[in-house]
Length: 229
Image 1 (cartoon, rainbow, N blue to C red):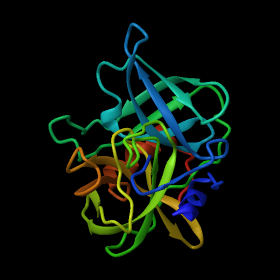
Image 2: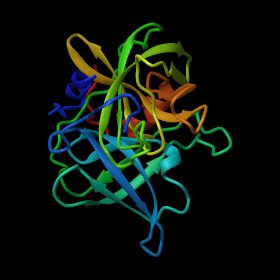
Image 3: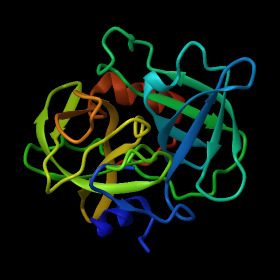
Image 4: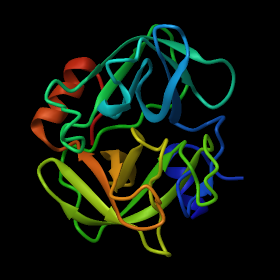
């Protein structure tokens, strides 16, 4: 599992069944959402896709979110300039169009990860998932990465299933990437959206499919210069 950290630039030494990654180099960052009083509203994961842009899940950017602090994994938190979620996202159907973008005034200082837009993810393909969520011991706010096998691909959603040999997403991983290798490079094929259970150690993981034209069109409207594979 340790090799999975290399996909996010976090070479090893809260993904369930994953490995701890080096937070000083990783492109997967921690998002701390604040309400209007400045109190913690929740936390999610996100991936740096441009010098001042982070891709995350729409459900992380709720109506109660007044500000966002971005923690790159080392050093100081950065304050988001603005954030937006896909206009078609609905809380009642939280696995469709579940993507959002966070923009900053300052460089994040992490390598940008390209979007995989040239092809669909494939059933049976091995992917890397990463995030700052809970691990198998229910410990949160630890950056971890692991591998998973894609079990279903639809126009809006990519799915994986938890097994003892592979990894699963958990609370706090939302917004993190599902990465696939294309031409020797890792690229984001989907965004962590939801689990079928709260236990995280079994069930189905759901990801927003970036190949969907409405989804990637929204991302490109927010971050026109994002790299693509």
